[in-house]
Length: 145
Image (cartoon, rainbow, N blue to C red):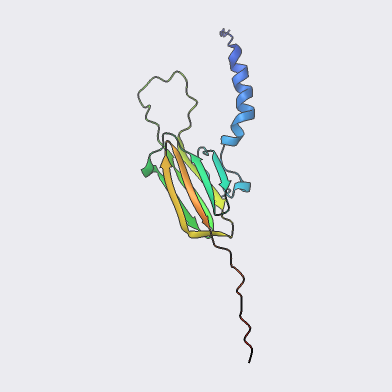
């Protein structure tokens, strides 16, 4: 017979994980990630102004050299790995995700793929996606002969 100490928070944690973790799980077919997935998926925020989109990817603990950003056929891919440096240590509790990750985003037609910039600050990767200038109507002068 097994005897275990009842932990009232264990059930609550299981419920919270059931309802809050789907947003942090692997990319799905709707995210264009059907062909390539990772061990976890970082959360993102996408903002838009008149001139650009800004995509923010939360990557705390991920080194710059462990992240790759690429654009191929108007698909923006952010992938990399968060390495676990806890080897040889006794872990009492962990809620951190480790391993490879990948996210795919289809770029809108008005994004200039040649003007994408990436910066990282405080564990947040920010991708600035500049919009193309809208074609302005050309005025044609009418000459009188």
